[in-house]
Image (cartoon, rainbow, N blue to C red):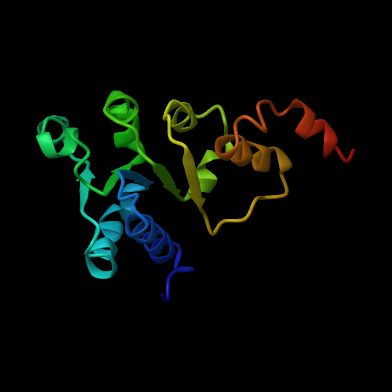
Length: 169
């Protein structure tokens, strides 16, 4: 589209292909609040075969939504939420059921591994993780390690060896 690189549509095609291959979900998509509705619109427009629920709103609205049998029984293919809602409802996202994938829109926000968002996401027991970003790293290889650590925690458990290997001073 005129605004981006097509990351949303590519991700929806990926999730649709997973459903077609027999892995319907649930899948988790975590976005900034500013693009949450865009994700919902694109899901309706391009992948009507994927059922989805937006987990967002006031505390009482989230409580009502998260007590819904359909939500609790993982009946939706895609669960859309925001960074803030993920942190506020962390118990639901970490304990209710296993998400097959997590997609983090604006994934460059994870470049600071000490952030509360990173801490919440690290507690998600999700086997496949996808970061979407159109923002390049700013000449800081430690930021690259933080993203790799989120994606491949076993291979990049600490930054010490990574940082020293790329210390060009």
